[in-house]
Image (tube, rainbow, N blue to C red; front, side):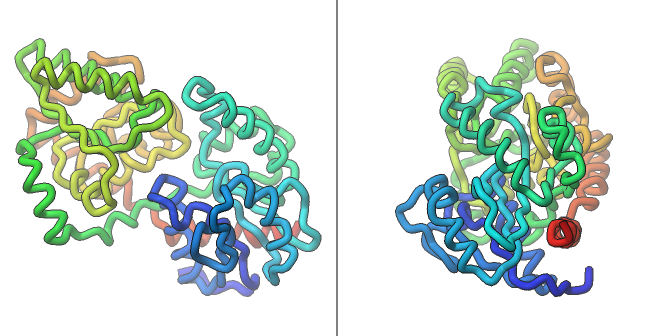
Length: 367
């Protein structure tokens, strides 16, 4: 473990602390735990009901732009870390260092996957955050390159700090989880997709692969664990049609972490052919749990999953069908990929993420 540092309290973006768990919310909690284990005292600002300055009914944007600057002026902390891509205050607070974590630039890279209002908010606020930040943490080299392609002036501020994945280790199924999963009567072998159902995640390619397999007389069961999102209506409509045609598809919606990770553990194959990821945590979680993952060849997933997960192009339904069929049909093949996946996932820990984040804090305070 890295030695504790004496950087004083850190003002920490807690805007997603009390919300349903998303990728950035998970990052918030896991990073906070890692920092606190290293002796860092966090002042959690902007959570809905908890922390040092709960925002109450105020929206996250209104809080960051309206009340957060005063909260920082009143705080003894010398550094503020914003965790949500762009949500630094628009003006510098005297005597405070600013750090921001950028997870991805999806609203700029794939504008059709978000609303127009959010796209403009992202573009303008990110540009300002790049200006006022003392240090920018990117969760992958892929995200760093995307950011610098648009903001080359930030090159001397940017550092890459990968996420951890060992948070999945703490989830042991309890009786309630076991009872719920038993009630689903899941097949012995099933393909799992876990995540939101938006266009970027490319769930439609998994459905294309299912249709190909069924046409060959080799149908596969699919479990979908994920919430509706912007643009998910077409996928949900297609799932309903395919179920009516006899496909074994189980849409479970949003699930608790306990159920989510136990589904990953029990799946024969995890399919995640996303069109783009700034990091790609779900397939890495599956790999950590010993489940073979199939990923796409784009975004950060090649960087994160390396050679430990078979990859297909995000438009290659035939290729995905072939890999799914091969893995479902071979215990030995699944074991091989499972072992390789566990070795790769072991490289990504929240302890390492916290250590490298502390280095970014120290660099920001020196500017």
